Length: 251
Image (cartoon, rainbow, N blue to C red; front, side, top):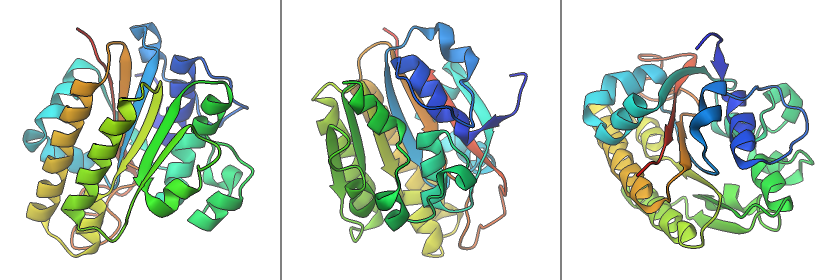
């Protein structure tokens, strides 16, 4: 990789794979996946999966480790310290100063469209699975929107993200976006490395289930939105970079 990678590069990379036209973005497509021949994308946003945290937990994350070895593992510069503006940048390809979305209410009111919305407008079947409040911002713009109640226990929340992602995949979308919160919520509760590892390991298993359910020539993108920004481990592993894994489902 001859250039630095930022999270704003994710949306234009997915757009190229899907053949979706978007307005100009601040990010650039990651060229290494151009020859993979994929025509579908699953984006799994793993909240708080910093690059250093991923490397520390890698021995306990066999699915993500395997995907990183078979595909690409990139050290991506995060563009915002909190979830909403970071995810807005992941999905629009715009820096926070250009999308102006700092909280969920801004997302609901914004005229800036995400890749999910551009894909749906071009009749590329798309689905999003995330916490209910965030999911509501996509209603009426994206083909399938599935929200999960935020007040569920950490373990149950991510398990429901998996269940609804698998249900969405049954409808054969070409783009699926899913947001797992377990690591971040454990950190906010003051959990230590054992708790963080447990949450990450569960998500790794869920990603294995998703990978088993997708067809060939699907590109899987796994990325953090920001490093750990709360709790006992804030700043221990990362302050600036997140893990970005790109992998192609083959035979």
